[in-house]
Image (cartoon, rainbow, N blue to C red; front, side, top):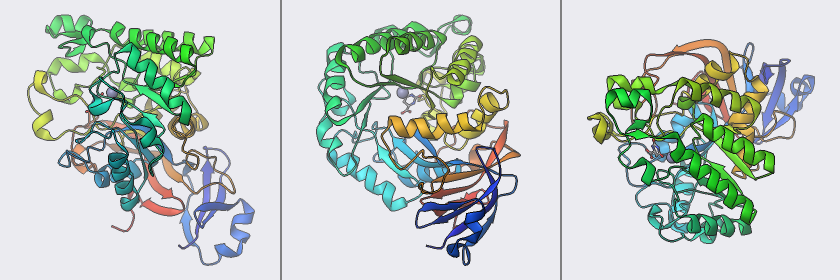
Length: 434
Ligand code: DOR
Ligand code: ZN
């Protein structure tokens, strides 16, 4: 593979310098990069005006393969991810069949390697078929070729306290983590949107904040009791922020994620009954949005995860009650984080790298992702033009589905190039080699 010399890009938006990529690694930086003998026949990339970050890592992606290849495949989702600046994504197991055995997680893992645009790291289901009845073969998935470390029944909550306890206990043996979709099922039966003023006005059944907060509180206590790692998926309310903050003060090993859509959008979007705004957990209030932004800035929330949830048009473009919940996220996540966190001064570029790359890699135990932009580190990188803006258009996204809630919005920041182990997956904002 040919070496790459990136000239004058700014790691973390700081001092611009040269970076030499060879044999999958960053082999030299600064004046040493151009002076290195491998620079002589390297491809030269003009990085002037660009910010360079470690390749982004998404802890929460739905790829839909196997089973719903009409909505997304490992290939189409990987393309969306690379174009969004990602070098690794964790694939949720709510596929058909469910990723609850070594066989299925290995299948997804191998599909990801074959596509080769991002590292696809499967998440294993906690319970067989995600039915919440008995534990899946967690150890078999952990010791499989996919080396699963994250387990989740996402889409559904592991609501049985005893099963949740057993799962937390079980994964300790292989340093795993349970990623919980926190939704008390009885409190959310038939729920259509956030329970509040807007749901009352529209007459839609509400999904109360307490249904999330009660499960997070219970799970933090369980994680404490058994001394295990808990990760909270798509945390969405100000009350959940308080619960996690209190648990962290006590020393609970809990981490939490927030989605880009919960950082930007509110429940009043539902008034037009456009199902593109239907998502689970639902869009919340402006007060929740500001609490989520502050918590992400303060470190109470650890990471941004997309919950990229493609849905085919027949499942999404239907009346509100019957529409599937979920939104696309991979190609818009970085721009939404720049809009909601970087531009208002809540995070700097180091902070963006922390919440979108370093910490998600650490939570998911990916050792060669989310590493510093420095000599000797793996060449998983994204080059960003911070001054370019763009208008979101669902039709031009790489996903096989078009359900972006950001349609028509102007957002800041463009992904110019992405490198996976020194190989260019995206250049000039397009998939490389196509
Ligand atoms: O909105 C959602 N969509 N929330 C989930 O938990 C699951 C996801 C999906 O798979 O579509
Ligand atoms: Zn979920």
